[in-house]
Amino acid sequence: MPITKTAKRALRSSKRKAKINKKILSSMEASLRIAKKSKKLKDISKAISQADKAAKKKIIHKNKASRIKSTLSKLQISKKQK
Image (cartoon, rainbow, N blue to C red; front, side):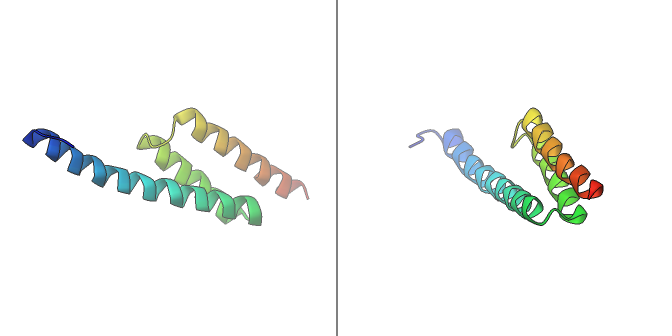
């Protein structure tokens, strides 16, 4: 447990940020599952957008976001070829 006043304040702030980060991450993962399952253009673009937002806020690494976008783009291309 934190002892000093600033450490207590930092802990409160950290908990708030962790809750927000978890919400963003879980919504991104949910949209990824939906996009991979449905393969609809709208769902794919939403998942790409969510990955970009998570990378911008440094919740996930930018290279991970790039890999996600690449995978989703392949789904989009295979959909167009059919």
